[in-house]
Amino acid sequence: MKSCDEIRELLGAWVDGELGRAEADAVRLHVEGCSVCSEERRQLDKLNVSIKSALVSQRPIAFEPFWRGVERRINEKNSWRDEWMDRLRGAFGRPNLAWSIPAVIGLALVLYSLGVWKEETPRNNFAAVESIDAYGRNVALLRENETRTTVIWLYQNQEGDNEASGETSDQSPTF
Amino acid sequence: MKLPGKLRTRALLFSFLATFAAAYLGAAETASQAVKIKIDTILASNQKDEFDSRLKPIEKQLKKSLKYRSYRLLKEESQNLPAQGNGSFDVPGGRTLIVSPQDFTNQQIALKVRLQGGEKPLLDTTLKLENKTNFIFAGPPHENGVLVLVIWATVQ
Image 1 (cartoon, chains in turn red, green):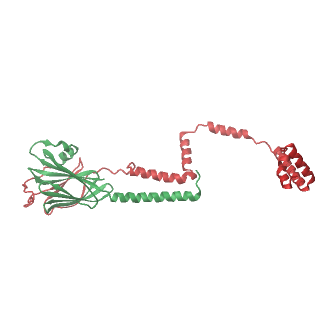
Image 2 (tube, chains in turn red, cyan):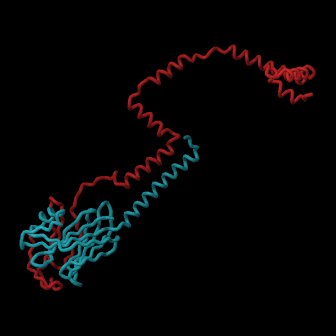
Protein backbone atom coordinates (compact mmCIF):
# COMPACT_ATOMS: atom_id res chain seq x y z
CA MET A 1 0.00 0.00 0.00
CA LYS A 2 1.45 3.37 -1.08
CA SER A 3 1.30 6.45 1.10
CA CYS A 4 -0.35 9.72 0.04
CA ASP A 5 3.04 11.35 -0.58
CA GLU A 6 4.08 8.53 -2.92
CA ILE A 7 0.74 8.68 -4.72
CA ARG A 8 1.01 12.49 -5.15
CA GLU A 9 4.40 12.04 -6.79
CA LEU A 10 2.85 9.64 -9.31
CA LEU A 11 -0.34 11.64 -9.77
CA GLY A 12 0.91 13.81 -12.64
CA ALA A 13 2.17 10.81 -14.62
CA TRP A 14 -1.08 8.97 -13.97
CA VAL A 15 -3.22 11.87 -15.20
CA ASP A 16 -1.05 12.03 -18.34
CA GLY A 17 -1.43 8.25 -18.85
CA GLU A 18 2.26 7.56 -18.47
CA LEU A 19 2.13 4.84 -15.80
CA GLY A 20 2.10 1.07 -16.27
CA ARG A 21 -1.12 -0.82 -15.78
CA ALA A 22 -0.38 -2.16 -12.25
CA GLU A 23 0.88 1.19 -11.00
CA ALA A 24 -2.00 3.06 -12.63
CA ASP A 25 -4.50 0.69 -10.90
CA ALA A 26 -2.82 1.24 -7.54
CA VAL A 27 -2.99 5.01 -7.94
CA ARG A 28 -6.63 4.89 -9.14
CA LEU A 29 -7.69 2.74 -6.14
CA HIS A 30 -5.94 5.08 -3.72
CA VAL A 31 -7.43 8.23 -5.28
CA GLU A 32 -10.95 6.72 -5.15
CA GLY A 33 -10.59 6.07 -1.41
CA CYS A 34 -8.61 9.22 -0.40
CA SER A 35 -10.32 12.59 -0.38
CA VAL A 36 -7.05 14.55 -0.17
CA CYS A 37 -5.45 12.81 -3.18
CA SER A 38 -8.79 12.97 -5.01
CA GLU A 39 -8.78 16.77 -4.51
CA GLU A 40 -5.18 16.88 -5.76
CA ARG A 41 -6.17 14.97 -8.90
CA ARG A 42 -9.11 17.37 -9.44
CA GLN A 43 -6.72 20.34 -9.29
CA LEU A 44 -4.41 18.68 -11.81
CA ASP A 45 -7.29 18.03 -14.19
CA LYS A 46 -8.37 21.65 -13.87
CA LEU A 47 -4.83 22.87 -14.64
CA ASN A 48 -4.61 20.62 -17.70
CA VAL A 49 -7.90 21.96 -19.01
CA SER A 50 -6.77 25.56 -18.48
CA ILE A 51 -3.48 25.02 -20.33
CA LYS A 52 -5.19 23.28 -23.24
CA SER A 53 -7.81 26.00 -23.57
CA ALA A 54 -5.15 28.72 -23.46
CA LEU A 55 -3.15 27.03 -26.22
CA VAL A 56 -6.20 26.50 -28.36
CA SER A 57 -7.49 30.06 -28.00
CA GLN A 58 -4.12 31.74 -28.86
CA ARG A 59 -3.85 33.11 -32.38
CA PRO A 60 -0.98 31.67 -34.41
CA ILE A 61 2.14 33.88 -34.49
CA ALA A 62 2.86 35.39 -37.86
CA PHE A 63 6.43 34.18 -38.33
CA GLU A 64 6.49 34.60 -42.09
CA PRO A 65 7.21 38.37 -42.22
CA PHE A 66 9.84 37.95 -39.54
CA TRP A 67 11.73 35.27 -41.48
CA ARG A 68 11.40 37.28 -44.67
CA GLY A 69 13.06 40.25 -42.90
CA VAL A 70 15.86 38.04 -41.58
CA GLU A 71 16.50 36.60 -45.03
CA ARG A 72 16.51 40.06 -46.62
CA ARG A 73 19.06 41.38 -44.12
CA ILE A 74 21.29 38.32 -44.60
CA ASN A 75 21.28 38.69 -48.36
CA GLU A 76 21.69 42.45 -48.27
CA LYS A 77 25.24 43.39 -49.29
CA ASN A 78 26.68 45.98 -46.91
CA SER A 79 29.11 48.63 -48.07
CA TRP A 80 32.70 48.30 -46.81
CA ARG A 81 32.16 51.34 -44.64
CA ASP A 82 29.17 49.77 -42.92
CA GLU A 83 31.11 46.57 -42.40
CA TRP A 84 34.01 48.44 -40.79
CA MET A 85 31.65 50.44 -38.65
CA ASP A 86 30.02 47.20 -37.51
CA ARG A 87 33.42 45.75 -36.65
CA LEU A 88 34.42 48.90 -34.76
CA ARG A 89 31.12 48.91 -32.91
CA GLY A 90 31.80 45.29 -32.00
CA ALA A 91 35.33 46.04 -30.83
CA PHE A 92 34.47 49.17 -28.90
CA GLY A 93 31.03 48.20 -27.71
CA ARG A 94 30.53 48.62 -24.01
CA PRO A 95 31.36 45.03 -22.97
CA ASN A 96 34.68 45.18 -24.86
CA LEU A 97 35.57 48.73 -23.90
CA ALA A 98 37.48 47.70 -20.79
CA TRP A 99 39.89 45.64 -22.88
CA SER A 100 39.95 47.87 -25.95
CA ILE A 101 41.29 50.93 -24.12
CA PRO A 102 44.31 49.18 -22.52
CA ALA A 103 44.99 47.47 -25.86
CA VAL A 104 45.05 50.79 -27.72
CA ILE A 105 47.24 52.41 -25.05
CA GLY A 106 49.60 49.43 -25.07
CA LEU A 107 49.88 49.51 -28.85
CA ALA A 108 50.58 53.24 -28.80
CA LEU A 109 53.35 52.76 -26.22
CA VAL A 110 54.93 49.96 -28.24
CA LEU A 111 54.87 52.06 -31.41
CA TYR A 112 56.30 55.04 -29.56
CA SER A 113 59.10 53.00 -27.98
CA LEU A 114 59.97 51.57 -31.39
CA GLY A 115 60.24 55.07 -32.76
CA VAL A 116 57.53 54.50 -35.32
CA TRP A 117 55.37 57.28 -34.02
CA LYS A 118 57.55 60.23 -33.14
CA GLU A 119 57.18 63.81 -33.96
CA GLU A 120 59.60 64.51 -36.74
CA THR A 121 61.59 67.61 -36.00
CA PRO A 122 63.19 69.26 -38.97
CA ARG A 123 66.77 68.08 -39.23
CA ASN A 124 69.18 70.78 -38.29
CA ASN A 125 72.68 69.54 -37.75
CA PHE A 126 74.04 72.82 -36.59
CA ALA A 127 75.40 72.48 -33.13
CA ALA A 128 74.09 75.21 -30.85
CA VAL A 129 77.16 76.66 -29.19
CA GLU A 130 76.16 78.13 -25.85
CA SER A 131 79.52 79.35 -24.61
CA ILE A 132 83.15 79.47 -25.67
CA ASP A 133 86.07 80.45 -23.50
CA ALA A 134 89.41 80.43 -25.32
CA TYR A 135 91.36 81.92 -22.40
CA GLY A 136 92.26 85.06 -24.29
CA ARG A 137 93.00 83.39 -27.61
CA ASN A 138 91.16 84.15 -30.79
CA VAL A 139 88.46 81.74 -31.71
CA ALA A 140 86.09 81.60 -34.69
CA LEU A 141 82.73 79.94 -34.95
CA LEU A 142 81.90 78.88 -38.49
CA ARG A 143 78.82 77.33 -39.96
CA GLU A 144 78.67 75.60 -43.29
CA ASN A 145 75.11 75.63 -44.59
CA GLU A 146 75.13 72.81 -47.11
CA THR A 147 76.38 70.12 -44.74
CA ARG A 148 75.08 71.88 -41.62
CA THR A 149 78.46 71.68 -40.03
CA THR A 150 79.60 73.77 -37.09
CA VAL A 151 83.33 74.41 -36.83
CA ILE A 152 85.04 75.89 -33.81
CA TRP A 153 88.41 77.20 -34.95
CA LEU A 154 91.03 77.94 -32.36
CA TYR A 155 93.77 80.32 -33.44
CA GLN A 156 97.01 79.50 -31.73
CA ASN A 157 98.79 82.71 -32.53
CA GLN A 158 99.87 83.74 -29.09
CA GLU A 159 103.22 83.31 -27.51
CA GLY A 160 103.55 80.19 -25.44
CA ASP A 161 100.52 78.44 -26.90
CA ASN A 162 102.43 75.49 -28.11
CA GLU A 163 104.61 74.86 -25.14
CA ALA A 164 103.12 71.46 -24.66
CA SER A 165 103.59 70.38 -28.22
CA GLY A 166 106.63 72.38 -29.15
CA GLU A 167 105.05 72.93 -32.54
CA THR A 168 105.13 76.01 -34.70
CA SER A 169 102.21 78.39 -34.39
CA ASP A 170 102.20 79.97 -37.80
CA GLN A 171 99.16 78.08 -39.02
CA SER A 172 96.38 80.19 -40.37
CA PRO A 173 92.95 78.72 -41.00
CA THR A 174 91.98 77.66 -44.48
CA PHE A 175 88.22 77.93 -44.74
CA MET B 1 32.97 38.75 -23.13
CA LYS B 2 30.84 40.66 -20.67
CA LEU B 3 32.77 41.95 -17.67
CA PRO B 4 31.17 42.78 -14.36
CA GLY B 5 31.26 46.48 -13.52
CA LYS B 6 33.88 46.09 -10.78
CA LEU B 7 36.27 44.16 -13.01
CA ARG B 8 35.85 46.68 -15.79
CA THR B 9 36.72 49.53 -13.44
CA ARG B 10 39.78 47.65 -12.24
CA ALA B 11 40.94 46.96 -15.80
CA LEU B 12 40.61 50.65 -16.67
CA LEU B 13 42.42 51.71 -13.51
CA PHE B 14 45.20 49.23 -14.24
CA SER B 15 45.59 50.53 -17.78
CA PHE B 16 45.97 54.12 -16.56
CA LEU B 17 48.51 53.09 -13.92
CA ALA B 18 50.45 51.11 -16.53
CA THR B 19 50.48 54.13 -18.82
CA PHE B 20 51.84 56.45 -16.14
CA ALA B 21 54.41 53.86 -15.05
CA ALA B 22 55.59 53.41 -18.64
CA ALA B 23 55.86 57.17 -19.13
CA TYR B 24 57.81 57.53 -15.87
CA LEU B 25 60.17 54.67 -16.71
CA GLY B 26 60.66 56.03 -20.23
CA ALA B 27 61.62 59.42 -18.84
CA ALA B 28 63.98 57.84 -16.31
CA GLU B 29 65.61 55.78 -19.01
CA THR B 30 66.17 58.85 -21.17
CA ALA B 31 67.77 60.69 -18.29
CA SER B 32 70.17 57.84 -17.46
CA GLN B 33 71.24 56.97 -21.01
CA ALA B 34 74.91 56.79 -21.83
CA VAL B 35 76.33 58.80 -24.70
CA LYS B 36 78.88 57.39 -27.09
CA ILE B 37 81.48 60.03 -27.87
CA LYS B 38 83.68 59.36 -30.87
CA ILE B 39 86.60 61.54 -31.84
CA ASP B 40 88.11 61.36 -35.30
CA THR B 41 91.51 63.04 -35.20
CA ILE B 42 92.46 64.26 -38.65
CA LEU B 43 95.52 66.01 -39.95
CA ALA B 44 94.58 68.61 -42.54
CA SER B 45 97.30 70.23 -44.60
CA ASN B 46 98.16 71.70 -47.96
CA GLN B 47 101.27 69.63 -48.49
CA LYS B 48 99.81 67.41 -51.19
CA ASP B 49 96.47 66.29 -52.61
CA GLU B 50 95.39 63.35 -50.54
CA PHE B 51 92.16 62.13 -49.03
CA ASP B 52 92.06 59.27 -46.56
CA SER B 53 89.43 56.78 -47.76
CA ARG B 54 88.37 56.10 -44.16
CA LEU B 55 87.04 59.64 -44.06
CA LYS B 56 84.69 59.05 -46.99
CA PRO B 57 81.49 59.40 -44.87
CA ILE B 58 82.48 62.94 -43.88
CA GLU B 59 84.30 63.94 -47.06
CA LYS B 60 81.71 66.48 -48.08
CA GLN B 61 81.60 67.97 -44.60
CA LEU B 62 85.36 68.38 -44.46
CA LYS B 63 85.79 69.70 -47.98
CA LYS B 64 82.92 72.16 -47.69
CA SER B 65 83.84 73.43 -44.23
CA LEU B 66 87.63 73.49 -44.51
CA LYS B 67 89.53 74.07 -47.71
CA TYR B 68 92.63 71.98 -47.23
CA ARG B 69 94.13 69.77 -49.92
CA SER B 70 94.98 66.84 -47.73
CA TYR B 71 93.04 65.03 -45.01
CA ARG B 72 94.51 62.08 -43.18
CA LEU B 73 92.87 60.20 -40.30
CA LEU B 74 95.42 59.95 -37.50
CA LYS B 75 93.29 58.11 -35.00
CA GLU B 76 89.75 57.45 -33.95
CA GLU B 77 88.66 56.76 -30.44
CA SER B 78 85.29 56.32 -28.78
CA GLN B 79 84.06 56.09 -25.23
CA ASN B 80 80.66 55.49 -23.68
CA LEU B 81 80.07 58.16 -21.11
CA PRO B 82 77.25 58.54 -18.60
CA ALA B 83 75.54 61.88 -18.12
CA GLN B 84 77.83 64.19 -16.15
CA GLY B 85 80.72 61.76 -16.71
CA ASN B 86 84.07 62.81 -18.16
CA GLY B 87 85.88 61.23 -21.06
CA SER B 88 89.49 62.05 -21.73
CA PHE B 89 90.86 61.69 -25.26
CA ASP B 90 94.53 62.09 -26.13
CA VAL B 91 95.14 64.47 -28.98
CA PRO B 92 98.51 64.51 -30.79
CA GLY B 93 100.96 67.14 -29.57
CA GLY B 94 100.52 66.40 -25.87
CA ARG B 95 97.00 67.79 -25.84
CA THR B 96 93.94 66.34 -24.19
CA LEU B 97 90.31 66.71 -25.10
CA ILE B 98 87.92 66.27 -22.20
CA VAL B 99 84.27 65.68 -23.12
CA SER B 100 81.42 65.59 -20.64
CA PRO B 101 77.83 64.86 -21.72
CA GLN B 102 75.46 66.97 -19.64
CA ASP B 103 72.01 65.78 -20.61
CA PHE B 104 69.90 64.47 -23.44
CA THR B 105 66.52 65.99 -24.20
CA ASN B 106 64.48 66.26 -27.40
CA GLN B 107 67.16 64.51 -29.44
CA GLN B 108 69.68 67.14 -28.35
CA ILE B 109 72.81 66.19 -26.44
CA ALA B 110 74.37 68.88 -24.29
CA LEU B 111 78.17 68.58 -24.14
CA LYS B 112 80.95 70.32 -22.31
CA VAL B 113 84.22 70.16 -24.20
CA ARG B 114 87.63 71.26 -22.96
CA LEU B 115 90.90 71.22 -24.85
CA GLN B 116 94.02 71.26 -22.75
CA GLY B 117 97.67 71.64 -23.76
CA GLY B 118 99.32 69.71 -20.99
CA GLU B 119 97.76 71.19 -17.85
CA LYS B 120 96.96 74.47 -19.54
CA PRO B 121 93.35 74.98 -20.67
CA LEU B 122 93.18 76.10 -24.28
CA LEU B 123 89.46 76.20 -24.85
CA ASP B 124 86.23 75.48 -22.98
CA THR B 125 82.92 75.25 -24.77
CA THR B 126 79.38 74.17 -24.03
CA LEU B 127 77.13 73.22 -26.88
CA LYS B 128 74.09 71.24 -27.89
CA LEU B 129 74.32 68.72 -30.63
CA GLU B 130 71.70 66.64 -32.37
CA ASN B 131 71.88 62.95 -31.60
CA LYS B 132 74.11 61.00 -34.04
CA THR B 133 75.67 64.13 -35.49
CA ASN B 134 79.01 65.84 -35.10
CA PHE B 135 80.76 69.14 -34.88
CA ILE B 136 84.29 70.04 -35.82
CA PHE B 137 86.93 71.45 -33.61
CA ALA B 138 90.02 72.60 -35.49
CA GLY B 139 93.04 74.83 -35.35
CA PRO B 140 95.80 73.31 -33.22
CA PRO B 141 98.92 73.07 -35.39
CA HIS B 142 100.50 69.70 -36.03
CA GLU B 143 103.14 68.44 -38.47
CA ASN B 144 102.91 71.25 -41.02
CA GLY B 145 99.18 71.17 -40.90
CA VAL B 146 96.33 71.55 -38.45
CA LEU B 147 94.49 69.11 -36.33
CA VAL B 148 90.82 68.66 -37.08
CA LEU B 149 88.79 66.90 -34.42
CA VAL B 150 85.42 65.61 -35.52
CA ILE B 151 83.39 65.03 -32.37
CA TRP B 152 80.41 62.67 -32.67
CA ALA B 153 77.75 62.15 -30.01
CA THR B 154 75.28 59.28 -30.09
CA VAL B 155 72.88 58.32 -27.36
CA GLN B 156 73.19 54.61 -26.57
